[in-house]
Image 1 (cartoon, rainbow, N blue to C red):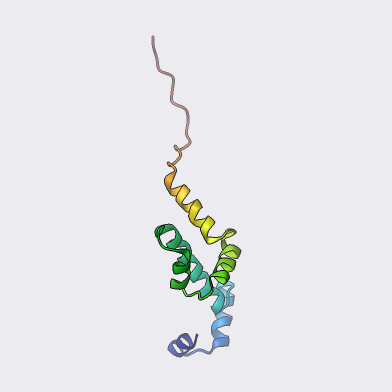
Image 2 (cartoon, one colour):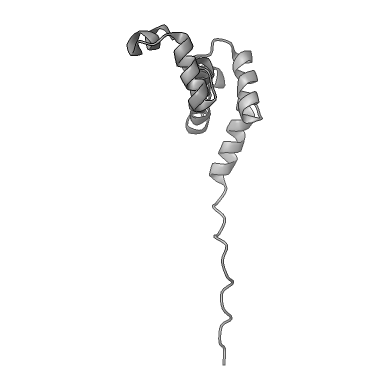
Length: 107
């Protein structure tokens, strides 16, 4: 936050006020949302990377805290999220809905 306030020349209170008004989040809430979004992307894209490594790479120092906030945001643990993403990627796309094919004229 200190870097942000120094670069834009506004104090912490003003930045939080603007973010709260525009996004409904404080600066910390906004940063946490970005971190969790990146973690979700990495969980999908890097299947072989341990969850702990992903948590550390997006700035979490406690795996239990990461698991807790991830579950609050996505409704499931990072492990379940990864499994569901893997299943979704492996299953074929459903055929688009549309009218049935016309019957063949055999006459």
